[in-house]
Each structure stands twice: as C-alpha cells, then as structure tokens.
Length: 174
Image (cartoon, rainbow, N blue to C red; front, side, top):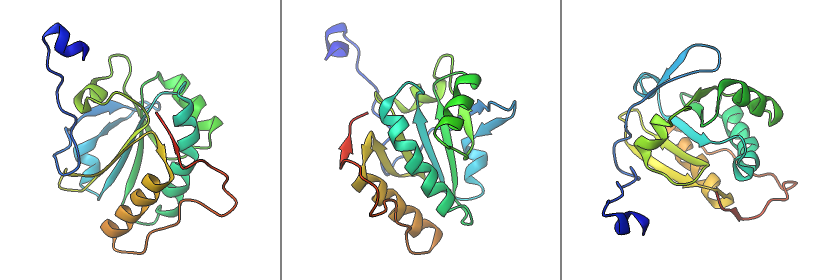
C-alpha cells in the first residue's frame, strides 16, 4: 500500500517454482556461505531469522530437530541471520542450533534479494536452484510439509517434526 502511494512497485518474492537468487555471505567463524556452492551437494534449507524475533526463537528448535534427523542425507540446513556474528552465535547456543549460520547484516543483502517482509522465512531449494517450498512464520503443517519435501528430495520417508509430547500451537505468525 505504501509503495503504491509512493509510486513504487514492490518486487515479487521468489516463490515456489521460481529460481532462488544466489548470494554469498560471511559466517560467524570467518568463512563464507554461497548458495550456489551449497546446492552442488544437494538440496538446501535456508532459514532467514532475527535473534530478537520470538517466532524465530520458537521455530528454530524444530529446525534443529529436522537438521539432526536428516544429517546423514544429502541436504544442508543454513540459518541466515539478520544480526551480527556475536549475537548470532549467542542465539544458536541459547536455542541449541548446531547447523551453520551466515550473517546477512548489516544491510541485509540476501534478505533483500528475496523481498520477504517477515522472519522466519524458510526456503527449501533443489540442487537446480528452484524453490520447492516456502514458509513464513511458524506452522506445524508447514514444517511437516517441509519434512515431506526433504524426504521426497532425498528419496526416503519423511521424519516426524513434532512428537506427541510437543505442546505447540498450530501456527504463530512471523
């Protein structure tokens, strides 16, 4: 609405079925992450987040669960943090996240490529660079579908995301 008022048209978000824009970001440890390089080894799950986002904090332990369950399969999980390295490392320690992260701050170069408005935004990208799944916010059904799509891409039955003992809402907006 504001863009229309200002005479600007907002770019479309890369959605399911579209090519994922490539990006290269530093890691907190001093290395780098390049999407196109990661895709050479198989599908990639990228989860954009901000450390102060309560929905991200709620979602990431379930992302960690998926990353651990699929750790022996050819799929990579990456967190894309909109915060600095120190805050990102503290976040990962606090929420038990062991999969790697890259830093999209300052400036949010990768986030801007994807034109999303809310975090967490989670994408599953095939090795050919096509987005096959996208989720914004927290959704039990959405994370279950993510596991199903990963299972399909790696050629095995999907892992359960939620256990009977998990008392979580069906959704939580980003």
